[in-house]
Length: 170
Picture 1 (cartoon, rainbow, N blue to C red):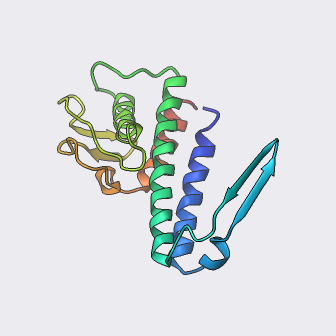
Picture 2: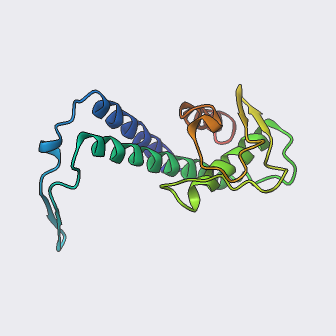
């Protein structure tokens, strides 16, 4: 549970950077220049012009957002494991439902964090999940590409973290 706050702060930062770029507040010429990092016996040289257009910047930040969302989802699931909450054989209680859907979101990102895809083959997981006022319907997602609206929007992951902090590791 040491890294859940960090993962969600990274996700919030990714959203802020994306919004900042959409508002045209990032100077691509200033950002996309050569850069050298040195220290600890290491030298890393990053080239300039890795992004050709402002649209390339938006796409890069969208990709960053997907990756940080996946990292936050994976971390949230790992925290529930660390808190001693196993995946139940039967999904009955609110906590069972939280655990089941968190596990499924984690699975969508775990095999390809940049292009997440649902992997719900078992009827037990293809269902409506309801907990703490959150409703997520995974009845028909099957193996389609993950989309934020599948879970009710990107804000739902933040709501899930709040639920976990209240009910799984208070």
